[in-house]
Image (cartoon, rainbow, N blue to C red; front, side):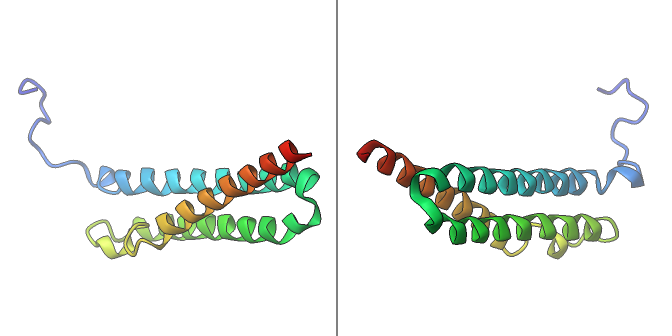
Length: 120
């Protein structure tokens, strides 16, 4: 490590926001995956549970869309404020809480569909 000419020097200005950029991109992928997952599970459970799944699917898709919008907004805010953690995606904890609730709800919907299918 000591033989590198840049060892011990501070990172270049372009690299200071790189971790925040990677985090924002990861949340963007998470939002897209949740949106696709919510719509897919809604479509699959529609066959076994019927039209009662339309409202939960729309709610799950709306929450996944919110996750995506918040992650897009945070990516834009991450660039000019690298030293202020208030602009982080995880600053208030709402985003991880919504993701956890959404994944749990989707799992329960799929479990309900499996139980109904097994009962028939």
